Length: 419
Image (cartoon, rainbow, N blue to C red; front, top):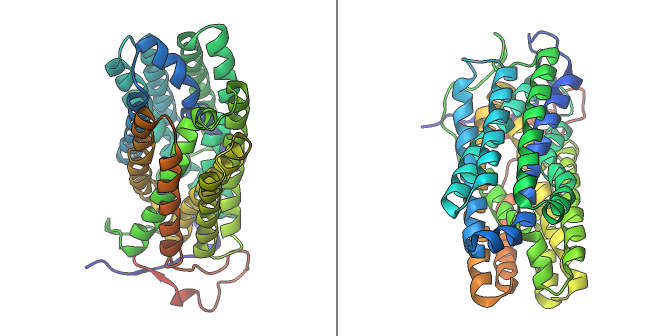
């Protein structure tokens, strides 16, 4: 039987970690995760790859799904390497893997090679890098955990904001293969920069002696609820992120307008991720999660009843923002419910829900599009998931408020079922 553990106010905990340079650690994470976040701009490649490789939309949706599987496997596996290499070495290795995967995708002449390069190798490198950076930063930075983790998870959609218009320009000017080669080169440079910054920051992935951590590996009801809430938001959010351009076009917008909308939606999601983490420093986690799902639900309802070009981008942005808020809330929730030394392996396990989400509605959306030529059914399904998310979010535990200089008198009464 798993033992219940209290919800900790970790920002108050004293540790014996040696002093490091927090700004350099955050800069290292930014340098590496921004180009890896270009995975969220995958929708820009859908049409040119479809035309050249002659593969259906559902197959390319599956490529994105496989990339999330690779991401999840990489994030789950990399904590086992924490005792074997430093944060700098691990970060550089992850960047090299990502660059190799993108290079293979640039040379792909068929769907299988594209799956191996973009889906598996690039996905593995991205997931491993993400957890390495999250673990390192969370061990160094001791305050404003919600805002910190909201920023960290915002780096991926922020990368899409930067790279989506660049990819579109590159595809039109040079072709998608040359664009992918350029991304591979950027990943190499980013990996070197992140490694140097990690060394300067004295970033570490193993906690020093005296830092509290959980003794077991069982995760209970709180973890399950957090993952389900994350899954339900991610299913609709990843559908928007992976196919935003084509969804907007399907509702009647011009391709140029759709590119602009895709960039704006990714920017809104990035802001929402930061906001989700920030809000958990001031409001209970269940309230923030519930509001996030309600926002996405409102967007799904609007697009279902008013399926027009001018409303498509706005409502997709609402769905994406709901997902962004949940992403920031989930990352902050891991930091609030469990000790910082456990952040890496617990955060990695939450991405099992994210992976399942990417293999569900985004793939189903591509299959439905191949048969109906539209995305209306997909939006209805997304709304139903958000409605369920509202109900489950309200059952999450309430950690003590952050911002106080002393623990809340009732903090010890709030408990999470985490073994």
